[in-house]
Length: 269
Length: 253
Image 1 (cartoon, rainbow over the protein chains, first blue to last red):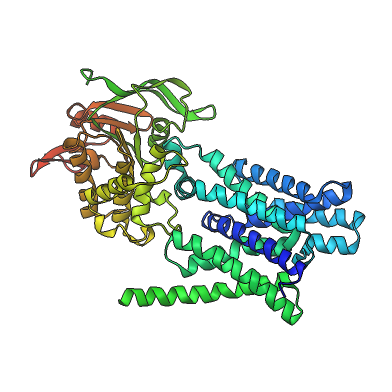
Image 2 (cartoon, one colour; image 1 turned 135 degrees about the vertical axis):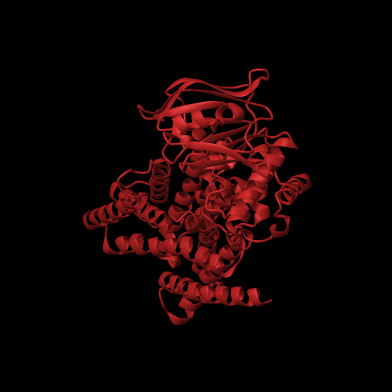
């Protein structure tokens, strides 16, 4: 089946998005900001809807919108009267509503469906290359600066006291999340982009016992689910995105069970 | 106290948030090798002073002067750390090297050796490979202390290091800090709400109570009349087994 070009392009884009989002997801889950991913995915979709309405370059507008929202979320001061999650929720609701309103007025049904739910089997060569380039940049940044990101997420006050610009590192973290999410949303849809960000990291953190192991397990799980989703959806004639999300979701309780058994077994030995 | 060159000096400093002052006219200094205890109840402004020392809060008035910007080994309250991250004690200790190394540098053998040495020095070398979140409160506090020592600091700043500890763990931490100060010559600033913690360890004490400040060498500050006036209740000092003890209230005699 990978002799077909659309399957090869889907595999390249899917694996690239899986690698970038799953590594970033470890930070997203540990920082307890999983809805940042959902909001950024919806802001990227809003950017694409705007691009469709205003005849702007689709991918570029989606990435710019997502990067802008990522920087705003990272830099926004925590409100005093409501938790920061409420601001993230506001962004999610507003972006979703405006996207649907724009698409209702401007886009054909097929375009609207593709923007909202994605279709990894219908992507172009350019989109596959873009996803791969974004993944390489995101992974390079995170491999190079892993120690800084870990310190800033683990104990920001001590990092600040040591003279590390925690605000700038948090903005960089959110920008990479925004960039990777926007690049993935157009091919995979907001649901799969969000699932790739959150579920492999959750599975990895439940199944493993260390940060390095989690950072290795999360992309392995994500890539396996993406390739498994492609193959099974081709064989069973099912939609690729939802099937991939279902595979990722099924891995979470299995990992939780495995983690519990391992902890129990580990304590007895 | 004036015979040595101060490492850090607060001169008539007003600290606060926005335009609202929390502490006014604060003056004290810390010299190399000194052990300063900053003591006050919750809400008295201890954390505000700590934030100013760490460079996280600018004074509203007055000046904070460093002789030369030292390497600060900061030990936060362990409750401040979100233990969800699955890092080992060794990985936490190694974080102390990060500011020295720069963002792109790799950890090398001397860095690992420094972290291992620091963990052993504070008595938790045997848990180096265990997850930080799986350790007891006392062990976590020691690992955070080891992280500060791994940075090879000029000044160790500790925020309520004995919070929530049992008596034995509390005593062990205080003894360890005393040893680091007296034997290794490390300058220590310890923030606590319990005067008893620094009674036998601090060389200088800064007491804050209800906006009033009492500062000086320990022998100067730890006097019954001064403490009784500051706390507005009878405070008595005594000695048991060669160590200072403190009793608040009680009958006279």
